[in-house]
Length: 207
Figure 1 (cartoon, rainbow, N blue to C red):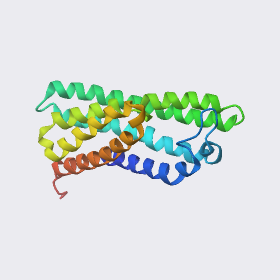
Figure 2: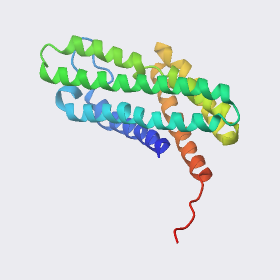
Figure 3: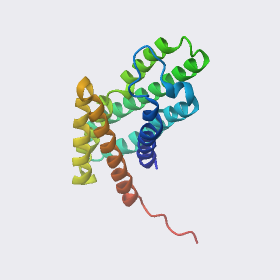
């Protein structure tokens, strides 16, 4: 369930971004101006931030713990590193979400003077987890390579998704690389969910 929730938060996040926020100029708002999306649909912005960051981070905490426990059977050392990396990623994502929501709330309360502060808080948000995917890519790569019993498909998708995170730190390639990472992560989370469901023990019938 945690893996499915993680995938769903990515799908919802991309859908809202493309269908609502991009048409309002959210992505290319000039520096020093308050995005029209923040001014006109602050409720959508807060809901969006809550889903893509806070809900995702809480589900990620569960998934990180579960996958680390499975990895300990064959790769205990890598499992420990993966759990640390996954918890760091979840904490960064959670922090980014809380900062993003505070930025929207402050901009809504003081729209005439909030633009510079919003851009500062938005930059912090992107630095923590919205603009680069190093922590997430590292964790996905470790899990994919350290849990060999998951199969080749998960390993390859995870490795390619993890490698794409490196390009997110390059300004010119940040947005395309972020999109590739997001799509790869959706597929990876879904594959993980299917594999965990198949491996789950079947409860005995109640008599």
